[in-house]
Amino acid sequence: MMYKHPETTAIRAQLHRTQYQEHSTPLFMTSSFVFEDAEEMRASFAEEKKRNIYSRYTNPNCAELVEKMCLLEGAESGTTFSTGMAAIFSTFASLLNEGDHVLSARAIFGNTHTLLTNILPKWNISHTYFDVTAIDQLEGLIHENTKIIYVESPTNPATEIADLARLGAISRKHNLIFIVDNCFATPYIQQPVKFGADLVIHSTTKLLDGQGRTMGGITVGTERLINLVYRFARVTGPALSPYNAWVISKSIETLAVRVDRHCSNALALATRLEKNSKIRSVRYPFLQSHPQYNLAKKQMSQGGNIVTLEIEGGLEVGRRFLDAIQMCSLTANLGDTRTIVSHPASTTHGKLTQEERAAIGISDGLIRISVGLEHIQDIIEDINNALESCAE
Ligand SMILES: *Cc1c(COP(=O)(O)O)cnc(C)c1O
Image 1 (spheres, protein in one colour):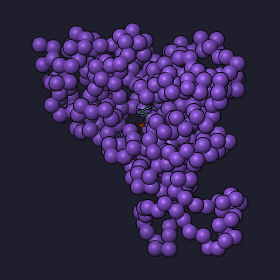
Image 2 (cartoon, rainbow, N blue to C red; image 1 turned 30 degrees about the vertical axis):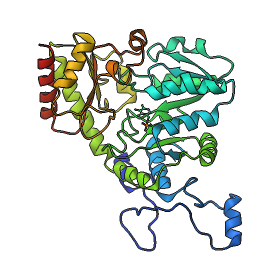
Image 3 (cartoon, rainbow, N blue to C red; image 1 turned 90 degrees about the vertical axis):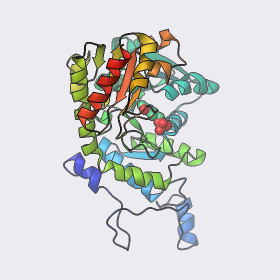
Image 4 (cartoon, helix red, strand yellow; image 1 turned 135 degrees about the horizontal axis):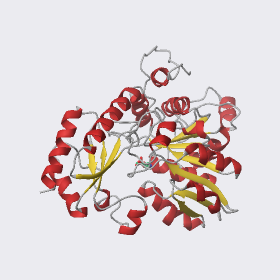
């Protein structure tokens, strides 16, 4: 059920109580479900009766997560996956046929990039990358076989903003499927469906779990498209564990309070670092100096939790900065309660050439900070101390 405010919906949307009248949703740790008699079993398998049969298909804990995310994203339907990448692969694989073409933003998650460049070509599915900050040229890149427009916004790690309303309008005009990976914003601060997205994908591993425990993925969107994605997934088997679904659904109850603090900490850190003379530049969507500040303000209610800085001195200084960090974690995750710092040029994007990195806004001195929920003063102190010592 939908309440007036998403904070309430995220807490109150839950499965029907069982006969035991539990307050918190129980864990349905079961691989299958029993039938009353032969007729019920027949009708269920024939899909005349909608009910749980087997947890590779559907499970109540996964259904609760889907319902919550549909309400928060304003979507009709959805289906869950074991990881974010399983959601992205299954969505592509279910909608694309041999010979189809994908128009994708060039700044996308590393493994999504590998999927487009190394895996989908096995089935003769091609792609063209475009720059989300130069959408004027986009229509010239649409071919007869183009089927999907795919973007992330804000992008990782350069925090570029894709104009979702314009992309939605272009997709509609050319009858394309518009897909947004909304992982960095969460539905609490940005709802792509409102701007014309047909499907919205999340890695729930990030801010939706928010505490760095489980992995998961979800795709939500129109009933018609989700049905295709679901049919593919129930046969190929990238199902989310009921346990993880239960953890993630519980986590979403606190999404609003967590994201409020993530964003206020991130804005405070970005504002503070902008004044630091050792930093060449700071990027954060809700800083007035961000080149797409107005667009960010138009489609997001807050700036998210990713702050990037560019320090003088390139690769070596970037590595020294990581070594000088005391409190923040050096790890691959993001959107955790704990602040995480990373140096993309020597890690996640180390396999790309310097030119390829430059094209997606990753310079050698770029540091990405996933701002956590610690006290802002402690975060600022750790980053400032590391900046002091790496500059020496
Ligand atoms: C992490 C991430 C993914 C992949 O999700 P996994 O749960 O790690 O498979 C996809 N897109 C974005 C934007 C991500 O940050």
